Length: 154
Image (tube, rainbow, N blue to C red; front, side):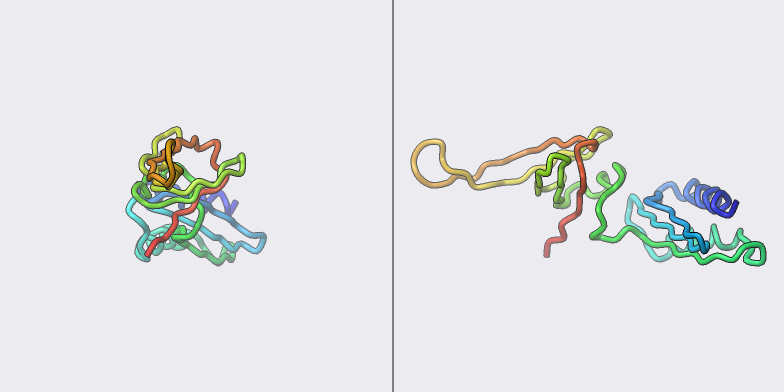
């Protein structure tokens, strides 16, 4: 009963703020509610407060005791939804595929099917000695991604 009410309140808040989206919502047996959100333009503390208030102010602690935690997806959290990829175009990603390949490159494109990563690498010249810089590209379908993380470069 409480879970359903929380889900309805959460959905109402997300309908009101279409720039925010849900990553996960968990509820423990002792009614600890943990909501993780992300946003097309990032997430501010005020955004977390907006979601928290939308839920908390519409529940009665006299009826059922609960605790509520609203968090933003962290910078080092794996990307889990296609919408997260779109907001990270231009950043460097490390993608682990389901066939255990690791590809690191700049996220150049994200569409409804998957992503395009581009990077440069040094390879031996086809003829003669030495190496040459080569531009590489990988198109990866969302179904083939096991895990993807943004690489923070300084």
